[in-house]
Length: 135
Image (cartoon, rainbow, N blue to C red; front, top):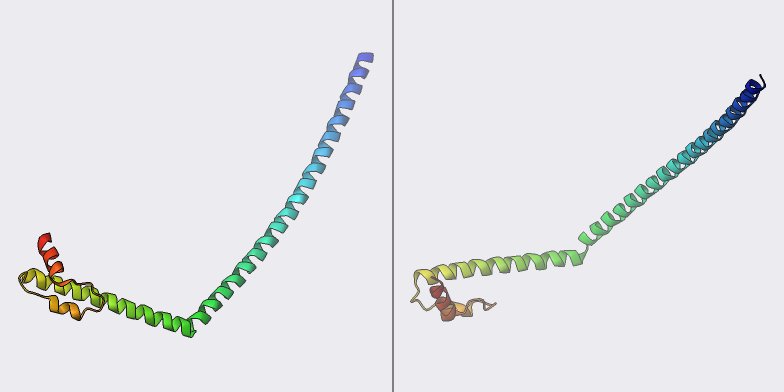
């Protein structure tokens, strides 16, 4: 019987150790859960703060763009852009028509049109000759 008592004592001691480990593990789990909840709350708070900052930045950005669009500088830039777009469109259209006429009448001297072209894109006979060579 002494062996049974000794074995029971060892089992009891092992059970106590196991219960202590389980208790300690549960305490650690509780601490981790508590810290996790705190970290999640902090992450949520930071996300809300970042969203508000982003929203404020976007409002300032939109306000700045609206102020700029209402300014004289923006109006001047729009006018310059429109004028440049018109000039480019006119130049392309003029050069296209000039090339078509030069193709239909390769012997025609169209150099008189060079004087009206302010940008000097068309080079009269040289351009006519270049176009004829391309065909």
